[in-house]
Image (cartoon, rainbow, N blue to C red; front, side):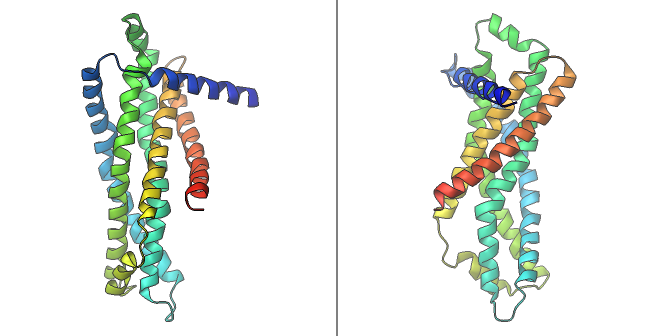
Length: 248
C-alpha cells in the first residue's frame, strides 16, 4: 500500500512536469483559458453565493444561541461570525464543495477524452495533451477561485447579518459593529493564500486522476470518485499545515 502511494506521488509530479510547459500556441491557450474560466469559475458563482448566504445565517443563529448571555454584547457575536467565515468557512469549506463540483468535472471530462482516445490523437499530431488540456484548467482555477472566495465571504457576512436582523436574535447595529471591530486585514490574505493552494490541489489532482484513466466509462466514474476523496483529504491536510505556518 505504501509502495503504491509513493508510485502514485511520483507519477503525479511527473504529470505536473508535463503540464507546466510552455504552450505550443499562446493564442490557443488564451482561448482555452477563457472557456475554462466560464466552465469552472463563472458557473460556480450561483452555488457559492447560495451556500455562503445560508451558511452565514446558520453560523449567526448558532453563535447567538451559544452566546445568549446578557453580559455578552452582540458586538462579540458579530466578531465570532466574521472570524468563522473569513478564517475557515469560506476558504476551506467552500473549497471542499468546489472539489466536488469542479474537481469531478475536470476528472470526468479528461477521463472521457482518455477512453475515447482523443488524447492519443493529440499526441500523434505532436501536441502535448497534458499541457494543452490541463494547463488552462489549472490557471483558470488559480485565477478565479480567489474571486469565488471573495464572493463567499461577502455573501456569508450578508447572510449572517440578515438572519440576525430578521430573526431578531441580535441588535443589528451592534452586530454590524462586530464585523468591523479590530478587523485584521491579514486574515483576508491568509484566506486567499489558502484558496490559491486549494485551487492548485483541486485542479491538478483531479486532472491527474482523469488523465490516467484506463478502461471504459465505469473507470471514468471510479476515477472521479477517487479524485474527490484524494482532494478532500489533501485540502484538510494542507489546511492544517497552512494554518500552523501562517497564524503562528
